[in-house]
Each structure stands twice: as C-alpha cells, then as structure tokens.
Image (tube, rainbow, N blue to C red; front, side, top):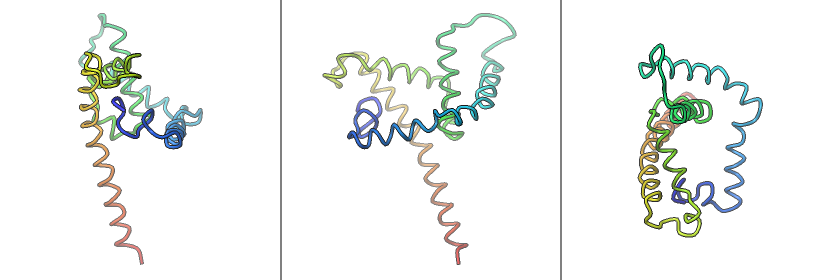
Length: 153
C-alpha cells in the first residue's frame, strides 16, 4: 500500500491483483517487445546526446543506466505522455521507492524508519507527476467522447 497506493498491485484483493498483472504483462509479450526497439534506440541516442555527456569522459554507470532504463521503460510501457513529463530525477524516486521495501515493511509498513520516510516522500512526488498525465488522458478521452456525440446521428 505505501509504495503503489491503496488497491494497487500488492494491496489489491487477489482477483484485482491478478487482473492488474495480466494488464501489465501485455506490454511484456514478445510481439510488444519488438515494437520497442526503435523507441529504445531513439531514447538512448537522445539521452547520451544531451549536454550532460560530452564527446569523451567518464560517468557513474549505475545511476546513468538507471535513468536510461526509467526513460526507455516509461516511453515503451507507459506512453508518450508519461515520458514527456518524466525527468532524470524520476530514477531517484523509483530507487527510493524500491529502498522503502524492507523486510520490516511487510510487518510494519508505516514504521518511522528513514527508508519509509523517503519512500513516502518519493511516492507523493510520483503521484503528483502521474496525476497530471492521468488528468490529461481523461480530458482527452472526454473531449473525444463529446466530439463523437456531436457528430453521431
């Protein structure tokens, strides 16, 4: 519950959890994965072509690859609108969410330990980020419904 929210994934009833897993697994089937290759290549080229990287030099591999994975995964699995709202700090938020799942979390998910406090703060930031995208998608869907209703006979 503290990581994804009430009724989502691990906090969902078994039937809903299974439905959510089926929904998520569609994007990981081999036919879908093949369509991601151009997006992954474009994302990597854009990422490494940014001003953050010069023609030569060194960088810390783990945070760099984490950022790139978050950007490519969001582009492929969550859609263009989500990717456009993401920034490289989102990888840090995901890391904090992940670090907030400790053995203690299963017994005391709200224990006031540093990992939980950081996890909760990261979750609030992620909710705010995704809320904008969800609101835009809903507005777009409502506009399309209204538009089709106006043209239906």
